[in-house]
Image (cartoon, rainbow, N blue to C red):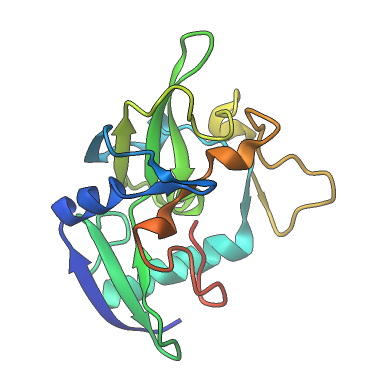
Length: 202
């Protein structure tokens, strides 16, 4: 991966765009329009994974991204807004956001800071003993929670794997039609998560 150009965007621009994010299956529903959004530095011990695995290949891509961003004086764990990246060999830029964390209140009253986007980056921060800056969101509508539950065992339940065997349970979904709870970050940002051959959202 070679980043040829980094364009920085302010925290205010980040929040403004987040308020335009829609649901994947309901483009008229702006999931973050009326919520509380802030940039916070939160220790990974207080971030709750919903995903039960981390892929070694993706983790290495995220580490490579961290090193490549550093060449441009940009810290993956402290974007202070978001960045647009231009990659050698690709015409289309990529928007990179901090990990997205939603406050989630479960049926028994437990409150979790659930990792909605950026699992591999948060895991990398954990490996490197870094407190990452994240997007912290509170007040999501109760009928539109994140589509999977936080892991009861937290980080101790997350396994590092090269691949996933058939039948491996990645997440414990809240409802049968869980895709109706997907947030579509590409409704407000550009090419989040791509191009896949260079790096993926983690």
